[in-house]
View 1 (cartoon, rainbow, N blue to C red):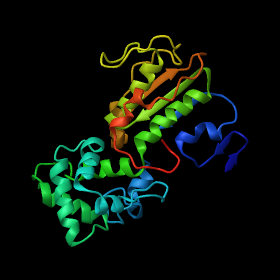
View 2: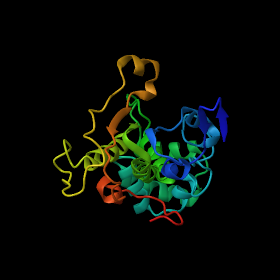
View 3: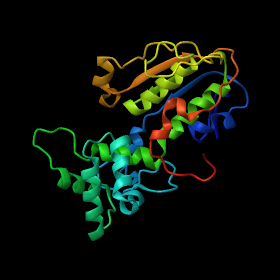
View 4: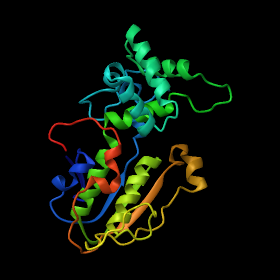
Length: 264
């Protein structure tokens, strides 16, 4: 832990353990769900195929690595990871191709995997997005259980916020944004959300109706192209008792996630 003039304390921990770190209730919680550019740009971390590096992707350097996943999981499980978490339309075809390829030589580096995916699905000259982009997204989200971590962080934020306290969440793709939207709308009593979301009766809303999401300006995206998909959502805590941490309300059960000791 580091301190700066008594005003700032830096604590290395997971978002989901927020209420284990915070002793008292707080006025605001800001969750920036994006992956650090420093992590992406370091080849040794294995998050990107822009530079060759070990096929790792673990933020905490513990648990299953991306190499473990692509070299040991069945094609059906890989297809779910690529299709659901990576939103890859050719997930099944890629998974089966990788299963065949690894039988000859296991994948060890980011370029090993990226090249294999490109070989399986091909690439047209006019395509700007590399065909392995969504595969890498799905693997990274799965290895780090990013969606589960986000859901647990939202419930933790609800527990530590004072009445009137703000919850601000910045997401960078639709899967994250959907979870945050569902949480805020459900906790506001089902007001103003999608017609597909259930309305809650009986329990007092723990958040006020969330404000309209904010997208980056043109100037922001010109300065930082990686911000183009960012969405900021904000909701204010009421004085109602904390709700049950029910993961069904954020739709988490449909997403594949690694099993971690001691977790549900």
